[in-house]
Length: 171
Length: 171
Image 1 (tube, chains in turn yellow, blue):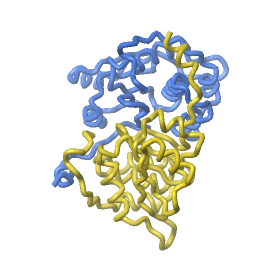
Image 2 (cartoon, chains in turn green, red):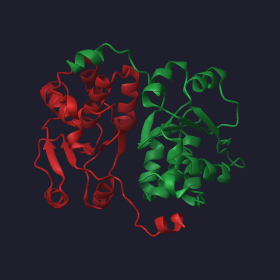
Image 3 (cartoon, one colour):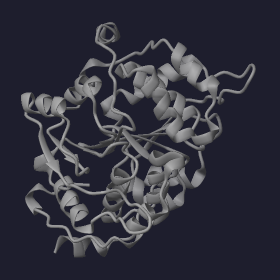
């Protein structure tokens, strides 16, 4: 039966710190070669990449072969006292994340904890989530590495999105 | 514009330990009255309830008014040394979770950590996830309350599902 067929397939290796956060929107740490089969199964079409560094070449090649586009929003992580996540980049990233023409989409930085956590927190704000539930979700992925500066960034964030009504998600 | 409209809506309070785990499948702790608006927004149609206790009356009433059905799979949480999650109930729960006629569906127990974590871990096994990524996800929701017995249960679990091909999800 069906279960027997499933058993024949290879083991799937999701990206580190992986989760679905909304229909067709996912978050994780930096994908590696071991995760390519998993990304293919998800049908990922766009990558929302939050680091300033150039994208890993082996990934670039895999994405090219599979019609996956990379949207890069370069940001440094929050670092006390004077390095701050750039609000403008977060607004640009969110405008892409909330455009279904980029879906299915994966948001990631290096560990999927801080920059990804901050951007996802801002997305929850746009969705109208209460601050306590947003911080709870942030901490679930940051574990004991959570940063008060990220949480404060999310609390103070004022969305200025440029949204395209016909491709707005229904959530 | 659109953002202004959104701002007019009330704050959403997701259930504790809430997450989307697959298209139209969610997990959380026990929903309370404060979460009803959120459940409505998600369009939940079925509740997969994993405790032996009778369901909270105020929730039963809300579900009745909103056409949400409760599917109860009574299980005690793992407790050393002799209380074990009943494998048959997990198989029954998974057969419901993997039937799109029940979607959108919310899986929950009390805290969304142990029974829910074990059932979701078994679901990941059916999906073919590697054991390390399954345990990583289990721990993300259990925090420092993770139970080795739950993890062992997931590792040893042999799915015996009764699935209905026409209503099988595409993931």
